[in-house]
Image (cartoon, rainbow, N blue to C red; front, side, top):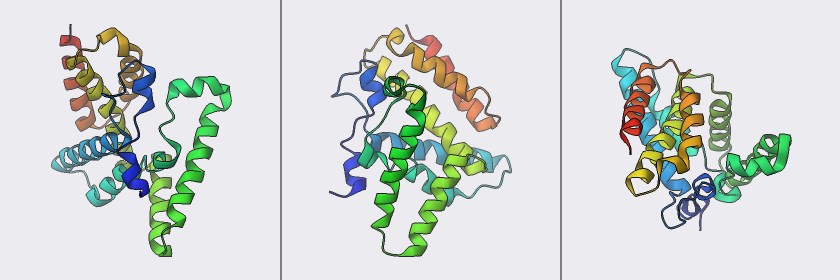
Amino acid sequence: MSSVGRLKAIPRSGWVSHGVGIQEVESVADHSYSTSTLAMFLGDMELGRGRRIDVERLLRLGLLHDLAEALTFDISKSYLEYLGREGEAIKREVEQAAWEHIIKGIEKTSIRLKYARLLAEFDEEETLEAQIVHAADRLDILYQIIEYHRRGYPKEMLADLWASTNRSLMHVRLSSVRKLRRIAVRRYKAMK
């Protein structure tokens, strides 16, 4: 099975650690698709405001941002707590090694280098496209929390994840992100 094919079978571990049943947990592939779709929509909203955005690059960033998880699985923040202060560094190192393993299988050097540059761009979060994908990644979490509540999971079960993710989006200055965040917040507040 290809690395991309494995993504559809890998559950997002953060949901599992928060108590979502394994049969209902979104996969890494589901998340990557949702993130890419949200990024495309945010990009189109920003284009409509006159911003210059490379939509192809935006979509490439969205599709590639979690590809290493095809080998490492999804290492959630709650799992990182067990690793102490070094947790984030260990996760980055493991995911970097997985990423390098994946792209070394690509014969054409120019494509390998292109993908490596895209991953670096995503990690640095300095370009508008990378900022949009990071925001889409977080927005997907908010909307997934709303979906899990719709399926019957209590609001309190994911409240800490909601709070930290929502907080991380508050500093984003893109009007498209602020708008989708406000919609999510309204829906969340309306949940019983």
